[in-house]
Length: 326
Image (cartoon, rainbow, N blue to C red; front, top):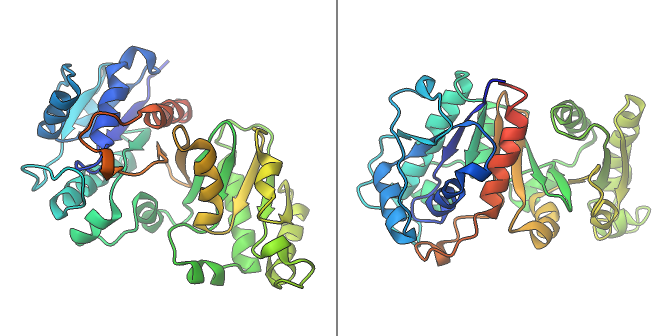
């Protein structure tokens, strides 16, 4: 069996990304076998190892094509970072974290990686660095317009119709045509997920899913027509359901997926249930991309107390999905 090559980006050097990456690889023998390549800075990792009292060697790679051992290796990425600022956003941290990510994505696009696992970045740091993408998925959506933000946990699975948009703009996109197109893309992409049978539950937009038009007309005018057409072409979808109860319908049912119309509609229940171990997956790419669902956690950065469980889960799921591509 050919082992997959999986890139791991360090995220914002001022956050907990380097910490959770090192903690994940401190127990390398418990991770699935793969060629793991860390994209980042040796200086950042050495300083983090001192904080964590860890000491393990990370061989350097001159080329991703040279990665043929299970032991994790480091691919040094040039950046203007000479000393990271811990615990807050900074321009240089933003430049460094974007370069780590951009380099890994380019390698995946070239076919040198089957998967990319991204540690958390700071959108504020990116903005300070003049990088105006609203995070990883926003950047990937620019390259791959069919990208879908999908959240995976044992308790709950959620697909987001819109990502990082102002609420007003997200609501303006609730239209029959784009919804149907989204359902079709989602069905196509879910064929690559370990979900042989699944059912999609569509969340409504308004309280009580509009209450037959008494509390809003979007359900009847836009959402329901898209669902009816989707059913006719074989997509296993139902709804729209009241947003305050639809997540209970899917809770602890591994084959049920909720489609949320905007970011917070889906992420509030998901992070309440699975903040420590939930995984963010980007569907619609020619390679696998996963990440922990938590952020940079600037408030605890540098203290050595960050929980690596979500990062470990993201690596394990990336391996599971990437193995089919290797």
